[in-house]
Amino acid sequence: MTLATPTLHTARLRLRPFTGADAEPLFALHSSTHAMRYWDSPPWTERARAGVFLARCRTMAEEGTGARVAIDRASDGAFVGWCGLTAFDPDHRSASLGYILDPAMWGHGYATEAAHAVLRWAFDTLDLNRVQAEADTRNAASARVLEKTGFVREGTLREDCVVNGEVSDSWVYGLIRRDWHPSATRVTAG
Image (cartoon, rainbow, N blue to C red; front, side, top):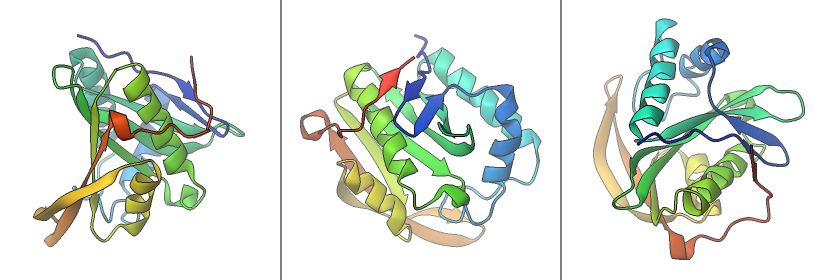
């Protein structure tokens, strides 16, 4: 089952399938120690990792296990970051939400806006019942994004990640269809 990667539009953002031209901004984002400090893997040190990431995005979509979209600012086309669903399970109608933004784009509400758009697609088009997400317990900003989009903190995974020798805990969040309240933000596909 192929999972078609959508193009979604909000008032300020365009979420679209990745292209080969995204390799450089992806490398810049994922090689940033600041952007990756709460991520569950170390920053990239080799440019080839961007190509591997893009290939994995294509494979996920082809296998029907997920979809990741690049986030661009609508006003000038600037690369903001990416957002997506992984671990898509059509039988259980569930998936996991993930996102990462360029630090220069933090604090503008872009993560919340992009997450809303992807969640609307997840619940309305994919007919999901549950979306899960995780956030490092030190990442208060990501926790706020999840809570603003309706997620409920369900528990803590103790010492679930070790990155560059540093052990960290993660909060697990869940959003159930019956608790989903789409924002007033308009999202269009295509």
